[in-house]
Length: 341
Length: 129
Image (cartoon, rainbow over all chains, first blue to last red; front, side, top):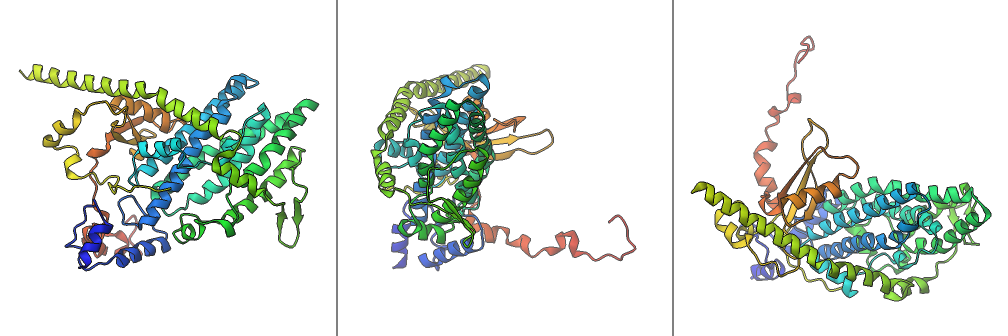
């Protein structure tokens, strides 16, 4: 009977089968697709296909991991920022990234996983994070390049995601976009100051741009033709623009901004194309791209070790907070009992 | 990546675990803390940004107790002076309507168009109404 297959599909879910006894799986699916087509947001307690849920858990949690791991390359320079103002600004930026990670972990939890499972997946290597954070920050100029290029690329992606179909993810993105714009400005500001400085400072600026340009382009993911998840993500309006579209927008924007810095982008094939009304640019080194994603980038091991260490060294804090809360609770209830007596 | 899905919906806390029921409190309040913070409850955060406005839901976080929840909410959700007042509520105390029943729950309101002022056509001479 049809109800048996529904029991298997909706395991653990409290659904009133009598109420929906006439509805089949494809009815729920049709209602879901109608919502998507009509730009109605999907909220945590709405029915959604398993695959939609799974792909969102994957995408949102990996986005969250990226924010947290992203704190590491920049945190590296907090103690060596050139001025107090730069130090305070960098601390504020890194603090923002922690907050962004939280919004995204919270959004992931709405889909039915626990924080612990999500964090375990990062530590075990099951879950990925943005490959860009596997590169080292070698100079102060790197901090500028990250703010301008990496946050710039992230903003492009995140503005698009403000219109994603899953409610909590979209709302998280709106909040994140508001905070992210200062990140890009502070990055550009750092590079601009360097570009107006001494010969060594200008060289340092150009060197950082040279090292961060291609990895920033890789942030947009594989070419559309080689992106396994894209079609489904577009149908479900999780993704609103393709990898290549976003990448092109980014190139067009940065190719103009770099002129203000009097610097160049390390791409001999970068050229304005009058017919296309876009910049042509060179081919990404896809071997490097897949290698870094697979875990063979310069800092992959370091990043995961740092995260594991932070988690393990924080166990006593979490246990102490829990014990303290229980102790306070007991004291309050026993006081209440005394007063009543 | 294989993901084990446990469909315990956010906001859809099953009756045995929901709050505000004296029978349930004793069962779930005093769990042992051996799980290294795995059982910090989830809290929903509401912020009022200015006197006179209402509190808005801004997100959620895990914390061991209310004081920690408020302090963390301040750190995470008010970095840009967005708050004069913070409310935190354990998620288990938020009871929600079932979205699938939205149609039938709100149906009576849909066909009462006379509740809207635009339904009424007044003569042009009438002012201030």
